[in-house]
Structures are given as structure tokens and as C-alpha cells.
Image (cartoon, rainbow, N blue to C red; front, side, top):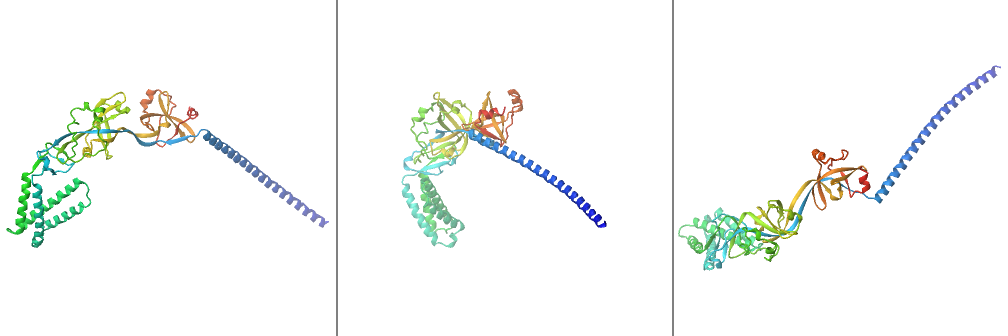
Length: 446
């Protein structure tokens, strides 16, 4: 009996343990089932989101294929209105010529240098000057030889410096092709030699052979000076030896005569360099200069006397100019006289040039013209903001064929325009804007 009782107890314990384990397993299975259900829900949601995203992307791609959108960014920039014209140069200039012009001339003041009134600018050679110069050249050789045989006392630092300068100029002659620069170098060498002879003469003992040679040279040099005809500047200004014969025709007294036909009849070549004259020179005013051109542009038609512009010279140097005189040729052409004060010496070589007129330039928010739409006489751009479009009112400052400078209207200006309060009126740097926006894109901003 006792054995049966123990077996019964064991069965009860076993059944209790089994029941407890079964309940625990059931509880765990329920948790696993709930977790699996939750995971399935998350997976379904993620799948649906992915499908929705794919649909949006596909729709966007199809939309762009059907209706491609180009954009640009608002940036800081400058635009200008320019044109290229042919201009005739008119100067306030005085031709200078002496009596002995047939003898040839020696330049005292170089081309393009400023001179003062009554300052010697060039001289005409005297009769028999070639013979005198030949004798001076022979004496220079003898003086050099005498110096080399003299005591070391003659070899002062000044003479050594002059020797160095003479050698340098002689070396430069090998690379010079310009006649004017060759003449200038030769004049410098002659000056160094004369200075050297003067110093050597002062250092030479009285009655020496070297002193005698230098005395003879000074006498010959003095005879050249006495017998030459020196020409002085009649006024202050810029000296030029480029005389083309038009100095008496193209004068500054009467600009009304400078019409398209008058200038064309001069039969000048654009950019042709005026040759250096060997008989005369001229002094040009350094205060102002004039360019006369005929233009067909709208800006030229609307120009008024006193308007400020900029001109770009052949050297690419930009100078300020003023509209000085206007001749209306016909409905399409206008002949303008432009006055400027800087860069005058650059144009001494020319009488007719190609140049650029810059009518205006403007700096600010720069955008392509294709971004601008006009509605009810007001101008707008369409801003692309993460795929959403906003219409923004802008104020046009200046415009060329391709670009526009815009700015925002002031608060007072917006009130005067009496526009809807919902209209956006502020464009900012780096805003992304649509180019050639479609009606659908424009309507989507309403």
C-alpha cells in the first residue's frame, strides 16, 4: 500500500511539473507569435513605403522625361552693354617746323615725352655737319688711345663708370631694330663719350697731348651747336614726330563737320601706324583727346551730350569718356564725338582705330533671362525648393541679351504695386530657379 501511495505522489508531481511546463511553453509561444506578427507588420509597412517611394521616383522620372526641368542658381555678377566701333582720333596739336628742315633733324626730346613751353625739342643739322662729326669721331679715337697711355690717375671711378655704361649701350645695339631706339642709344653713347672726355681733360696736366685733343673736340662740338637750328616747343604738351598731314584738317574747333561721309572720304586704314617724320614734329595737348565714330546701336540713338561711358583702347586700357558732340546721320546711324583725358600718349601712333564703347555696367544678383516670366507687367522667377515651386517677384535693374541683374523691391515699392500679400517678394543669393518654366510649373505656385 505504501508503495502504491509513493507511486501516486510521483505521478502527481510529474503531472504538476508537466502542466507548469506546458503553461510556460504556451506563454513563450504566444510571445514568439506576437513578435512574429509585429515583425510581419513592420515588414509590410516597410514594403509599402518602398513601393510608394518607387512609385514616386518612377513618376518623377517619367515627369522629367516628359517635361525636363533646367535650373540655375542666383549669383553675384556683373553685366555690361558694349559695342565695337571704328574711331577717328582728333587731337589738339601744333605742328613744329624750322627753316633748315632739308638738312635732317636730331631729336633732343624723345617720342611721347612731355615738354614744357620754349624747351628745345629737336635741332636741324648744320651745313657740313657730317664732316665735323667725322673729325669728332677721329678725335674720340685719339682721346681713347691717349687715355689708355696716361697715368692711372686718369682712371677715376667716374671714367670707369662711363666705360661700363658705354659697353652696356654698345651691347644693346645688337638687339635693337627700332630706328628711334637706335638713335636714342647712339645719342646716349655720344653723351657718355663727351662726358668722359670732359673728365679726362680736367684730370690731364696743362699742355699735355690729351688736353690738346680734348680742346680740339670741344671746339668742333661748339661749332655744331652754334650753326645748328634749334626748335623749341611752342606750348607744353606731349612731343611726337608722327606727323601725318591731317593736323590741320582734323581740328577741335568744329565737330559739326565730322560726319560719316567726311570721315570716310579721308580714306584711312584702321590701325595703320603713322610713320616718323624726319623734318618736323608736333606738340599734342595732354589734357584731352577725341574719338569720332558712327554707330547703329540703340544706345547711340538715345545718347545725350554729357553722358558718361567707358572706352577700351587698342592696348586694352579702359578709360572714362564723355559724349561731347552728336551728329544724327539718319534714323539708324549716329555719329558721336567722345572726349577723354587719359591714355592720350597711347594713341600718338594712330589716326584711326578699332575700339570698344562700354555704355554701362551693373553689379548685383545675376540670373539668365530664361528664368524670368512676365505677368501683368511684373516680372517673376520660379524658385525650386526641394521639388516645390514658389513664384517670386523681382525687380529688373539692367538686362543684356542673355543675363539680367535683379533686386528685391523695397517695402514702399511693394505697397505702390498693390500686389497680393501672398506673393513672395524676396530673392536670395544661391536660390535655385527654373529656366523656361512651363505653364504647369507656374500654375503649381498659385
